[in-house]
Length: 195
Image 1 (cartoon, rainbow, N blue to C red):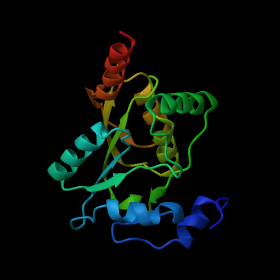
Image 2: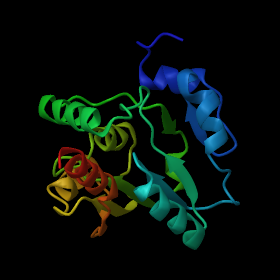
Image 3: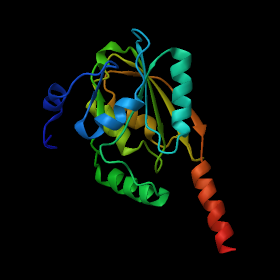
């Protein structure tokens, strides 16, 4: 499937899964297995991006507590596994305003009233992939409940980003939690190796 198709053509060209998710061709086989099926007619979506798993843990807890549908936000081309490479790439993307293409979209976004939106803070802001997600979906009339993990420096301007890109949505105050294990681990190992 050509990569130059616009989103509407792409959505029409791909089948709708039982979970109400449309998957791009490149992500279909890997993603369809990781997306749980809705437990009825849930009006709650738990959409999240998690690089290390910290945000995913919170997302799964919210899904269980609210009987929601879990949606793992993915880029079409994954970020590097190496932490420093990911930091450098995200910094370049943020500075240039680049929005990485998504690996999948929520095709039935209209069915949800409440969207729990989870992501880590990257460089004192929301990751570029979250900007892509917010631009790709019409969230007007929805209640958005952000849940955010960070490395100790707080939320930065992430809430301004969410509010500005989720036009017409009721964006509630974020739940935030420090979760800097990867950064701390790398610093400790580097200190050990240089001592």
